[in-house]
Image 1: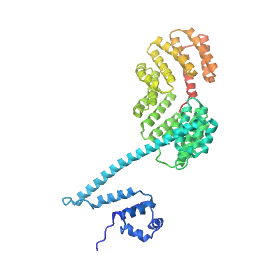
Image 2: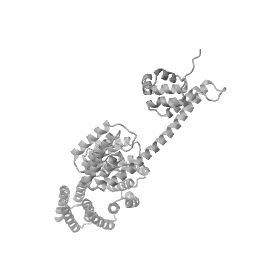
Image 3: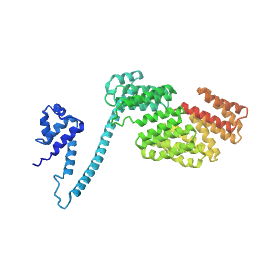
Image 4: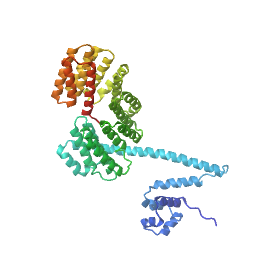
Length: 484
């Protein structure tokens, strides 16, 4: 007697149970039924779709899993398909396989898009909540912020920990103390985040603690923080959340290695970061701009400029105007260092327009004016360059940026020396030295400027000495104004 073929619903139940690695006894116990009844269901006896949805519930599969299996069975077996006597079994089989492939491809596309949209919606909602919580938290007195953040569960949100971590990076541009405080606050929140995201959240925040310590020149503390960040991060489980991208940890550690002059390590970390960010234009653009910083710190301006050219399409695709300003400004600056002044001049209009859009606009515009004056000097437009540098150096002093003021003054001194104005240079050197002493500037920079001033007093100052002093102060300035 010909054996009855298994029903699609029974096959679906058998497949889903086996896929989970469950025995009939285990599933029957979970359902509170006799295993022999479950066996009859798997053969398709008395099994309806409603009953099947109940049977698979303990396995954790959604009802759509049954739909997929039943659809595949229909295509494979040909049941329910119109009779096609003109086709051979092989031809029918090829059509079935093509239909399955086409259906599966379409399903994957739709599934991926719906998943992307849902993740974006959830991320947007979490971001709005974090903004509201941070607005409440940051207006509280400093001594109360940690009490609120650690004492009330409404603040134990991964998106808020991320928000405060990023605030520590912005604070690093003007206050190392504020950056450290915010990074520690973010970590306190992360340690209380419940659920699967807690370890990844803590690892992410530890990396920002490491960054804040780097800015404060506590390199030993930064090393310890990054070691802790990776230890906790690797102990965590992967989630489908985009809140804590791994590339950011690599990117931040690369900044530490750059400051420690461990340049090969910094470049290797940035290579890993680029791979980890999955080709996202904004992330790739940021990583490549960091790579340009490393090459500049190494004194390899050619490689720095080539890196900016590689970054350009990613930055432009990202639509981030601040990043675009950094790209164009750095490109013009590198061109100046390579004495390619005409090419740098061609970027000035766009750089100036972008600078006016960014905060703080006044500082950015002053830096662009400094760049323009250097380009004028390189193109032989001495009067325009002198006038520009005179304005810029006073603007920097007004904005409490003595290093930038000193560098602009030294650029002016180089121009004066080339024109034989030694008396003007002596006055300029004395003025700079007095300003630096009043501002209590780093002793290395002060020593370099004092050497320049003493040489000017004895009328022994040269263009070469001015350029050496510029290089020394530039090195100190980079150390004094580290950013992420």
